[in-house]
Image 1 (cartoon, one colour):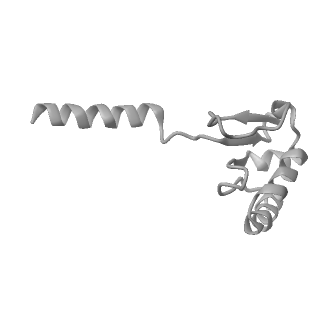
Image 2: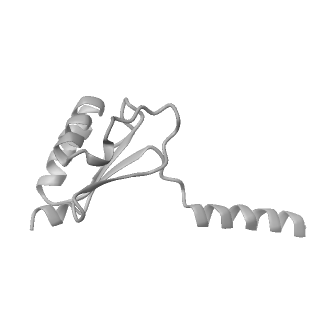
Image 3: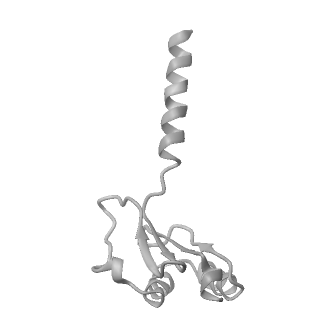
Length: 105
């Protein structure tokens, strides 16, 4: 019984310390005006110079690779100053736009 409890505790602790694992995510932070990257699977093809990509460059990638609903929703949310995260796009990447309210100040 102790081994089972220890095993469950170790799994819980590992999950807590590592989080649910944001993988394959490109985040544009409007407070810093820069791109932040999560860990990426080896099969994901990232654009060159991704760290220097602008907000408009990322929006273009969203329009090119993401669902039509994401494209419409991102316009609404960002115009009202809200953060937005896309679903997984056709290129295997999730795009996040955070601290959008800083852009509207």
